[in-house]
Image 1 (cartoon, helix red, strand yellow):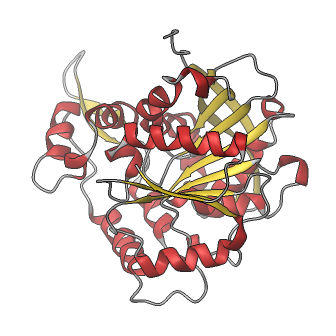
Image 2 (spheres, one colour):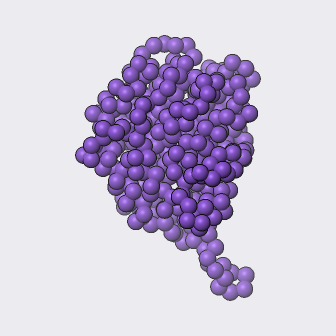
Image 3 (cartoon, one colour):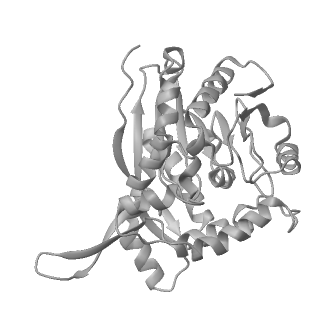
Length: 344
């Protein structure tokens, strides 16, 4: 097996908006130069809410471990949202100044325009883009695609556990219940630890969110999803510090609101259609919700896949299995194998 490509860390400047204010936001990316195939695909990965771009490292490693798959791909981009992961550190001065001025914090609409700005960069000019989105970032792709020119439309879109919501959503729908719970819970949850070791113990202990996560993804989360903050000088040469998420609680909470994920139409046309990856366990999206999403997407769904043993956080819990599913999906996209339902 040939050596896997090593990702390059690149920072892009994107001209976009926060609310009604024109701004220039930084975008920390991972760029994988995969092959020299000029007609190869360009994959663009976006993470779910309160996550980070490096969560896809194990999935991409599994994806690229197949030589035949690498011949289909020209390159891969993985991006952070503007107030998530390492990108949040670059944008923190602007984000905090925006809040201090009493202006609205970064919304799903703002992030969708940020994604749109990324898709419009010269780096992706003439690329055959395939979007790979998880959870809430599926909504961002739908928002972004409603107002971009046809030349920027993705060749295909892969949605992993899409949390799309519609105006007809009832308060008893699991998406409504989980959304409201996350709005409240994100404000109430702990956001300070003495160091990363204490954070790791908390994540895997008791009912910690990381108990079911793949160890590689969990390790990356601790490294890239949090920062060390200096509090005050204690003695000469000594500082007290703590570890906190790079995404602030007051910025995270409103992103879960149902209205932030409500779309009037599911997706525009894509050359090779929409491919949907579901979790095995219905933690967030019920069978009825899946049917509603599929009915709205209509004929655009080309294939459906289910990741055995996975809950809603598929990339975190089953990254290798997701990588295998992507291999099969990309084969369908390139070779057009038709409608497929499968369990990985």
